[in-house]
Amino acid sequence: MAKGSGLGVRGVLLLALIAVVVLAATGVWNPFPRMWDWVDRSESLAQPQVAWQERVDGTPKSVTIAGDTVVVEQRTRVEARALATGGQLWERKADWAAVAGGDRDAVVVVGKLLVKGYEVLDPTTGVTRRRDDDAVAVWTYRNLLLDARCAQPTDCTLSAWDPRGTTPLWTAFLPGVGSGLFADNPGLRGTRRLTAKRIDEAAAGPEPAPPLLGFPVDGQVHVVDTANGSVLRNVQPGREERLSVVGGRLLRITARSQDGSCLFAISGVDPATGQEVWRRAGINLRTADNAGCAQREDPQGARNVLVGVGPDGREAVLDGYNGRLLWVGADGERLLAVDDRYAVARAADQRSVVARGLAGEQVLWTRPAGGKAGAALTPYAAVVVDEKPSRLIALDPRTGRELAVLRTSANALAVGPGGMVIGEGREIAYVRFGAAANGGTAPAPGGTAPANGGTAPGGSGPSPGVDDTCGPKRELCPERAGG
Picture 1 (tube, rainbow, N blue to C red):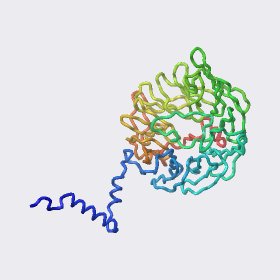
Picture 2: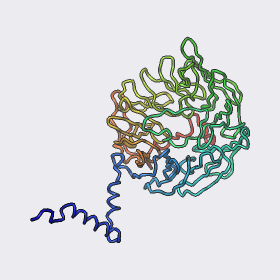
Picture 3: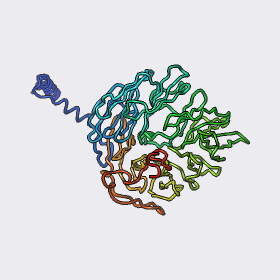
Picture 4: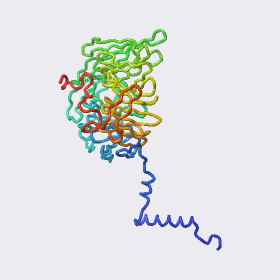
């Protein structure tokens, strides 16, 4: 047979490709969508299998569980997805977005950079519930929404709203809100949270509004009572001082250079009277750098507590209200996470993490973990991230009971009462508490075992009957105080 007398393999493949293109163009048969779906199919972010997994248009800036929805903030847009299925509910163009309210009254606040005003959206439908055209900054909390508008640079009004309210609860006047205070949740004088790799700093969602807030204005701190909007005090810090508002007190933090080191002192002041109510010396709140003891950072902590280092090098947790030591770590112990209720620390042996209650420092649970393990505390779960092997673990913060144990390299983005959202790149997924847990773990040597079993009755998350939202002195729930 003569050379080249047949079509050959290349010719056959070319004819087959032409036939497929013709069939697709005429609508008879089109395999390309299915082929692309197969190529673009995402691997599961975690094992055991997640409840759902979706790819969003851009890398998320923040993810928040808002009632029955998941709100995903991206660079130029915000979208909401159904918590049950992951299906998209709505999408809006926005430069920034934040969630206010709790599980039953959540709203989404959106706006544009360098443009006054904002909109309050329903998280399920995306419908605008309220619109503002004048505000320059917004602060979102679990029980409150604050905004600031300025007629002149030195004439501003601070207003408080119920998350779904249509009229202000109160207004207060401030001599400006500072040039750096704009868009959503600009920094106030409070505390910096402890952070951990692979756990988003805002994974807990909006916090309850603290009893007092400190607004930095022209070098001063204006202390505002969030219950009624009264401005209790305008304070100018001293040359060696940094001011912070924590736990219902104005803290004067002094760092003075002497003999080649920094000498620290903290005093808690009642803003209503200006009287000092407590003082401690020698606790380093990590507000100063090494250059002349200049304080450029807020103290570390959460809600009403502060984190510092004592003269002996051991970490400590202080009550911002009365200065009482709530927890003092052992030699070599490293604090990983803290809130008003609990402290989670890496043990000195670098082989376990230990959770203690701040009321009495009793050990609540211990579990094995590597020397690079991190942790975060949320109202619904303590999240522990471990390496080699890579794990994300959600635990009941009071008992240590496993809510979810995942083999994954993804990050924990948001934690809610029934599960958590994890993500990596543009992929996000939802993990229901209880679905991926194995029902408890063995205790670490010399430690305490977490409670065994599945989820709490009626759902997942912390044990029922425990109110973790009112603060240690119930100062955030005055209507139920003493009840």
